[in-house]
Image: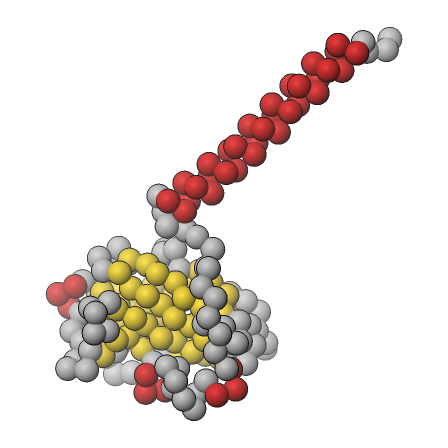
Length: 180
Ligand SMILES: [Cu+2]
């Protein structure tokens, strides 16, 4: 029995509602994740020369780690390289805006800080920047999540989140994990 033209039209209208509802649900989920949980795709577009990363500019060894900037903001600079994070441990205060900046001199790496919205790729030639506020204290496991070579599984760091009272930067505004 052939379906009448009206039946076909009804089916099409019904399915277009299903498609509209699915699309709306996805859009609402994206907005909810972005606005309520602060989970956004990294949007920073900033280039850096991977060949001279360690020689000059902000990613030289002495400039890596945590620093309280002149404006009071906390910035963490980390180089991701085969197969380590430099430095391997960084200390950050909770309940305060922290900016994390990553750069790679070799291949693509990835960073995620467990239990936070920090999750980005680190592409040679670009600075990956993420803003976050740490809510819990503790040593947060921070693995490389982009396969970067044979030592990939050994590539991880610790983000040590401490209470504001325990965050004690030195006179230069620098703070580091004990003994590292
Ligand atoms: Cu890696």
